[in-house]
Length: 143
Ligand SMILES: [Zn+2]
Image (tube, rainbow, N blue to C red; front, side):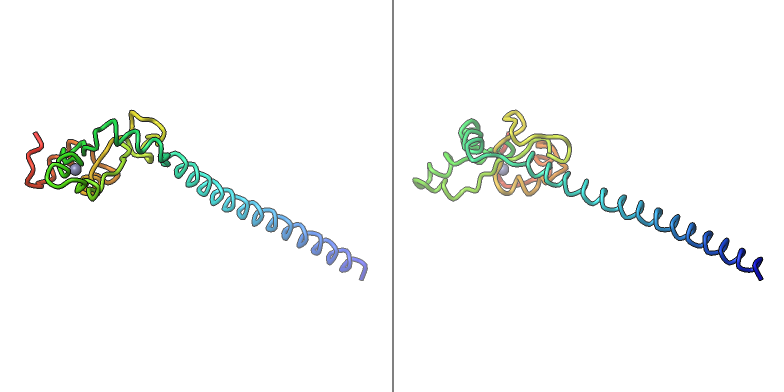
């Protein structure tokens, strides 16, 4: 009788041990998943911060490029020469030459250029200015 009690105690100890191992493993897995999610969120925030171009920098880049798209050459001045202030309706954007995803910075003026809305959409995140130039046919001589 005492023998069987002894075995039951041994089995219970073993069971508790196995459950403990399982608990440790589950906890480890949970922590891994959480740290991966946290890492991804931090990366996202860092990317957004790097992409950001301050309004001051934006107006500086537009002025530096003389309000002219660096791909197709369309400009505020050209529009204004037809009708005064028509150029205000030309949507010029400040583009990251090297995309933030590929290591470019939003606070580096050498990495920023003025593009018109159409060229910027064509450029996306993967193409260079020359590749876009070859793609577009706006009916405007860009050479
Ligand atoms: Zn353009």
